[in-house]
Image (cartoon, rainbow, N blue to C red):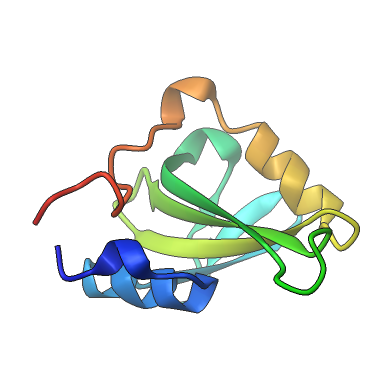
Length: 115
């Protein structure tokens, strides 16, 4: 693996996952994730979390975020960064809590996969 395990910041991981085909961008609106490119809308049952990475801010440990690596039931693959802690988007955080446990794995985590 091309030293991917040394990535320290969200942007580093996003770049690595983009090289692996996770290029879709999503935004949240009206209780759905929406693909910025295709405009496909997804409910929690349509989303599969295949990896996640948690980060703490270097200067402020309460400045946290979670990078979700996701696939959809329509085979769109991308990333979504969610602020965590005092700056959390509560509605988006609730959306991710509603994703069925059967749709959550860590099988695409770049720290666990050998090329």
